Image 1 (tube, rainbow, N blue to C red):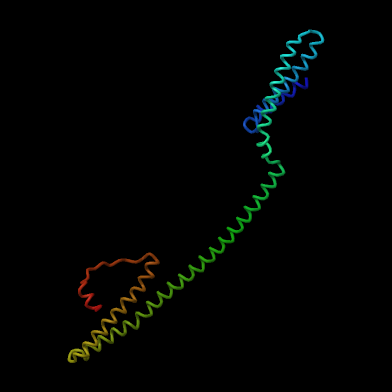
Image 2 (cartoon, helix red, strand yellow; image 1 turned 180 degrees about the horizontal axis):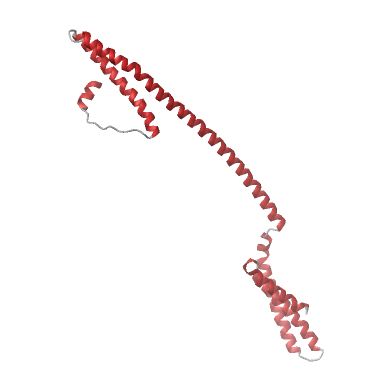
Amino acid sequence: MAYFSIPILIYYLIRKAKNKLPFKKVFWLFLLFILACGLTHVMDALVFWLPAYRVSAMVLFATAIVSWMAVIGLYRIVPDALKLKSPSMLEEIIAKRTQQLEQSNESLLKSNLQLQAANLANEKLIRQKDEFLSIASHELKTPVTSLKGYAELLSAMHGDGNKELSYLNDKMQLQITKLTVLIKDLLDVTRVQEGGLVYNKASMNLTEALKEII
């Protein structure tokens, strides 16, 4: 009964484990092996009353075949079985991997904090630069406007009768205009970064521009 109960338990294990059970074929071979061994014991008991020696010999022969099949199957899976990890080894591996992940996570958090601090410092510097450009541009507009007014007043008072003075006044007006454009460019830089720059397209005389540069 024990010989026949063990195969039933192995079969139940195979059915319940489904694809989770490693080396399923070997379990089937052991099921057949133990079942064959049980049959040989049954035949040994029957031989006392029935002289069925040939049947007993056939059962023994079948048992031998199944036994060698189990041996070969077991021999083939030994290398793979040795690679399997025990529960304690798996727990140790999991603990080690968990520790590595925690260290990596701490490193990432540290790097993230450093990056956030660098971004905040960079944003602060950008704001300071924008504030400086905005303040500088507005502060420069006031004296430039005054210079332009004085230059126009000087031209109105003395520029008509004095060619040299008129020439110098024109040059001064030109430089004041350039300075005004530079100040406007500074303001445009701030507007570009704020996303509020408006392009004013206009035609230009390239010859005149080249003459002025020369």
